Length: 399
Ligand SMILES: Cc1cc2nc3c(=O)[nH]c(=O)nc-3n(C[C@H](O)[C@H](O)[C@H](O)COP(=O)(O)O)c2cc1C
Image 1 (cartoon, rainbow, N blue to C red):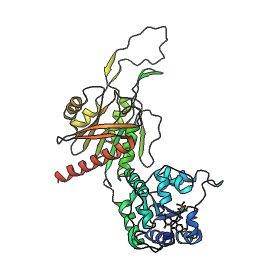
Image 2: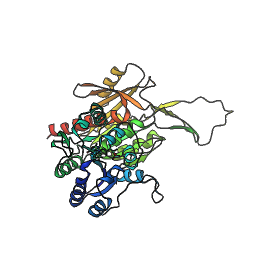
Image 3: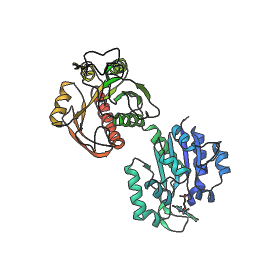
Image 4: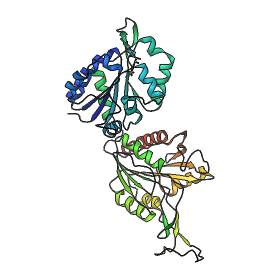
């Protein structure tokens, strides 16, 4: 028996009548199905039939007193959103980031994969704007089930027909089970660390944690069990992972070393402080005291993990303001890493605390890969996929 929560979005296409059968098929497989209708869809399918086959209330309204933030509640818990049929209209709205009804608002707040099943008249489907919108959505990681070709309800012939219900269910099962890293445990570190001078003063760095958090989410979406150990940041941890907040390098080292034996992949994306004050004063230093601070090196967590790596896959980050490539290549070898992702932190458009990132990746097997500037989320998805594939290859090589 399958399990999982599916939001089934139904829009105003002629094929909407087939979604009662789809909802029934998914429910029979064991999925919990929550139908969400657009205003257009109600012309083609009745809420009562969908409620009957799924056992769940059919949702239509964004603004309800019973559940004021229904779209967030639903997206927090869903494993998949399907939109079948997906009209040209909803495809355009999603591609433009519009959120003007419950279904588009849910998609804007999504926290899981989305499967679009476009169905429409052939001319509409082949319209270059519709095609551009579909390509744009594919680029953003949406799954797309191409429509079938044949006689359409409008009398035209060509692509545009909603695929058979069994084919849509097969696609759903593929998306929900086809996860690269099912059963793999991944430890990600993120954010800065703080090294205290006295109880209220500390040294730290500009890391926002965004890249590490995006990586934790990307590994989660690949099916991994994720542990995220992070220094102090102002962003929320992704849903569905184990979050372990820490403050100092020593605390981070303790947590990471404690988890190390039970995980398979370790990605050290945290910007760990390299130095700490030699002395931490127990009381706040009076400002009258002129004081100079001596620093000592903090523990090199990555190096100590590299020394006991075994079959694990170890990834480091190199944040540099200059001579990035030489520094990264040297760190890859010195720390016994499998892969290193180098960030140019001298730039304000990528790296520390920015929304986007650009990475130069070097691998143990001598490859150099460039991830061009994109949102940290997309860069994280690409990097997590590469790490996942390399980890699995490494396991296969060693038998
Ligand atoms: C009888 C009829 C059938 C329609 N079938 C489709 C269709 O199969 N695909 C489509 O994209 N639009 C179709 N439309 C147009 C949509 O219903 C219209 O664009 C609507 O605004 C979609 O709203 P929604 O996407 O919010 O449900 C049809 C309209 C009518 C009147």
